[in-house]
Length: 419
Ligand code: 3PG
Image (cartoon, rainbow, N blue to C red; front, side, top):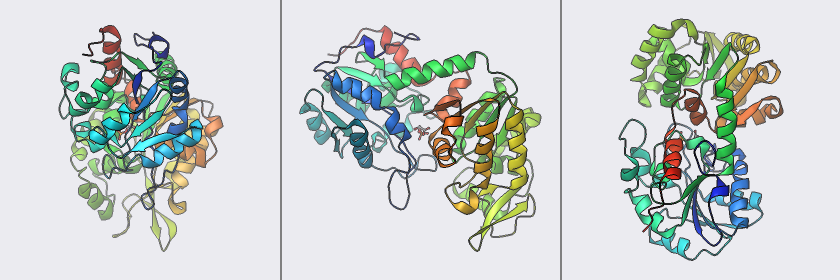
């Protein structure tokens, strides 16, 4: 047991059906549905290999989201192929989550075999129950459909999804009430490293927040500022644009229309409150890049022409961010500065990642897109710690006990109640 949570050393899995929640949520190419990166898939292999080698009948649960918040869910079918490749053994896939076909597939598993269920977020409870919408107790989580259907078929629950540890969802927090539970090896490692980091981050401690998960980014910003973890927050992507709007700046009508269309206008009020309380710690972009005739064109704030959609921070902003990163002692990064996948709009992210590679600060990055960017700019070997979690990492740093950690601790202290 570590941190009050069972590890794989504390559960008997030989010949047992083990339900294992992993986080293999990866950036997806929207046009082809192909995975653009496999970092999280590779990261959970040690746990899966250990469980399979120990003779578990292994059932994997995972989610796959889109690049914008929680929309456009994809099947986990391509993930089964990648898992098979990295494990060197077949991972079967079933296009069902907890219906009759999935349950039949679970029942027919033999020791050492591995089955991946389809995207758990195809079950609506996985999306609607978490965060602020509706808080369920451990007992209530255990009464959700997914848990009621799958728990009776399983003997042990393992959670290796550190990257989703901030989500209060049945696949993550519902099984611990009913089954003997443990964290997997990846969860254990990330928990251990990040806990160590939290004890005393050297200051100044700079957070770089960007990306498209904007609700999350505002939650994080608020937490790291109010908790005192952040001395400075550098903002990019949509986060920066919403802050600028809240600050009364002109970000261009296309950006405003996009923010409204995606339903983020409500965050302008949140941004105003954050600016009122922490204005001296929040840094917003001063210039932006747009694409005109296939090429990059930069505009200062307030000069963005009608019809142009900002897709990256500009050069002046990126240089300023580089200076702040190079002067820091600790840097946490979650999310790119713009659409770094496309050549004309990658410079902002590229420059920030360059500074991450050569700063003397202790650097930590987290999250799918951040890792993809580190790989693209060949910085993985230069960054001190790469965490599979983005949102989970930052939320962990706020000192809040994450829902999955709470559930695993709870599970490790109660007697298995499986009927
Ligand atoms: C992540 O990418 O941060 C985790 O996989 C959690 O995904 P979510 O933000 O869609 O819940």
